[in-house]
Amino acid sequence: MYFPARFFITGTGTGVGKTIVAAILLTGLKYHYWKPIQSGMEEETDTSVIRRLSGLGPGFFMDEAYCLPKAASPHISAAAAGVDIEFTHLNLPADGRNIIVEGAGGLLVPINRNRLMIDLISHLQLPVILVTKSGLGTINHTLLSLEALRKRHIPVVGIVMNGRKNAGNRRAIE
Image (cartoon, rainbow, N blue to C red; front, top):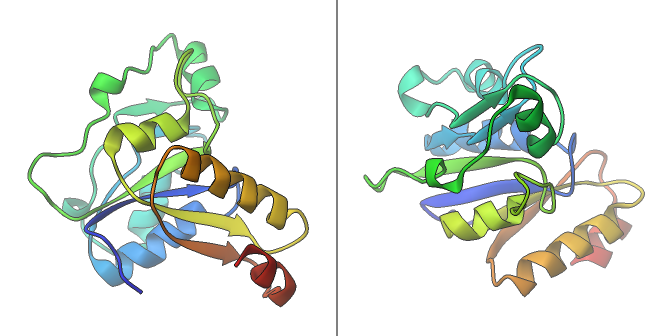
């Protein structure tokens, strides 16, 4: 599979396995990793999970632009923390390093009053790897996500179906 130098990992929702997929890809590709908005820090952040799973040193990881304590949609977590998430703080480094960016939640999750996660992907001008579950409901969630990405002219590098193999769902999505 072809991997661009920079790409965004998003999912059809929370809990579909974006962080695990990011850890696997980071371990193999040896890119840098950035989670611009971390919502929820009660256990581990996604960055600390990926550090632990990948075994890579701190030089492979960029600090979150926003690290919000409440495990909720970024706009809710930011409001609870009294923070405004500004896109001016959400920019890729100019040095051209290879990087995997991981989103929070799904494509239409609000980041602030006016912007969604898909707007961040457009702002960063990155192609996407879409992570989805393999089971019941995935056809609808995946196709809706693909439709949203296509309407915004965001390239899709690939889809990762996470969970037990389901050839019927895979074929329907293909």
